[in-house]
Length: 124
Image (cartoon, rainbow, N blue to C red; front, side):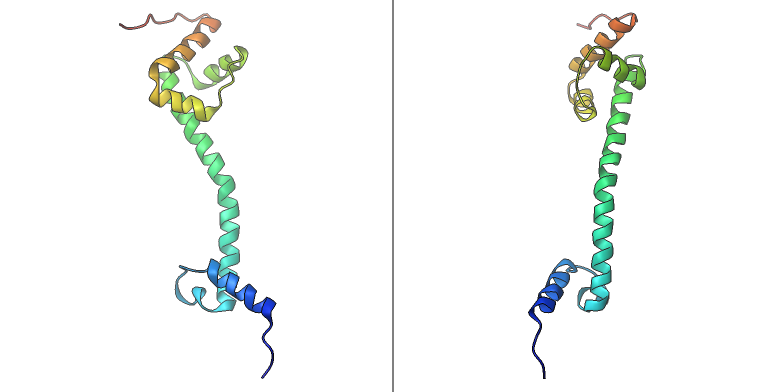
């Protein structure tokens, strides 16, 4: 017989808890479960970083689509906002572009005026 090592049992319990929902023996065989859990944790760490990049790219696309409707490019718009010291991040700019078109047009017009472009009169 022999005594049960509490540390090892707890570790196995933790691994099995994390492996819940895995397919095949990866959910109930410690050797396989440990490998799968380690790999899953690596993926989750990597993808938490990738998620930030993906969303930034999405916001940039949405802002670009919004500013092109008003005849200006994304880079010029962002540069103009920085020059005017308007400190809105890309997440908020994308949100404004989608939900509040008049507010977004006001931002674009501010940049256009600063750059010397003609500004469209507001539509009634």
